[in-house]
Amino acid sequence: MVSAAPGVWLSLQGSALVRLYHATSYEQLAEADITPPVHKMLAGSDAIIRQHKAACLRITALLACQDLLWVGTSAGVVLSLAVPGKAAPPPTPLGLPQGHTGHVRFLTAMEVPEGCELRAGAVPVLRPTGPEQPSDAEQRDPTHPRLALSKAKMLVISGGDGYEDFRLTNSSESVGRDDSTNHLLLWRV
Image (tube, helix red, strand yellow):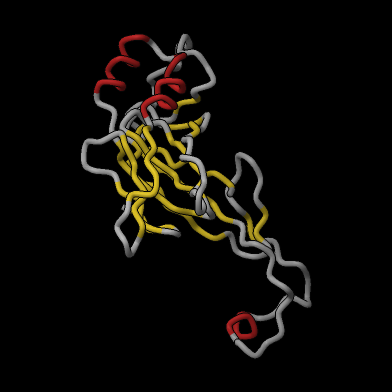
């Protein structure tokens, strides 16, 4: 269960459906089935693995972040869908090209600090902008003038068993080597 305007997203235990309910009237506003996009993402996988993951498919994690609902699955596929506004069509989940070989254990988000440089394949690095950089005390002082804030940069983090690139077919010798190793995957939002 996760809260996001205009209500609460809910998935029942063992279900492949996620539903949006209005926060005060409890009316169901939207429903999304994750089965079709997960099957699409698993299309390049070995037939036996694909059948096993499809038979056991369920939602394992939910996260609302910047007008997107992120969905983790037992198949290791991470999906995102736009949080619908009033009178919007039903949301369509989209599979992300990278995921886990096993269950998605959790999804979380963090704001990237101002001045932090994000590069693909690297850990975020804080780069001071020079001697005019305010001290820690000045940054915490609510009376200290600040520059206009731009939309915060966010990272969405998924944790799970193994790493899988769903764009590739699984004919490589390295497939399965890190299946039991826990991995954190990061997406810039």
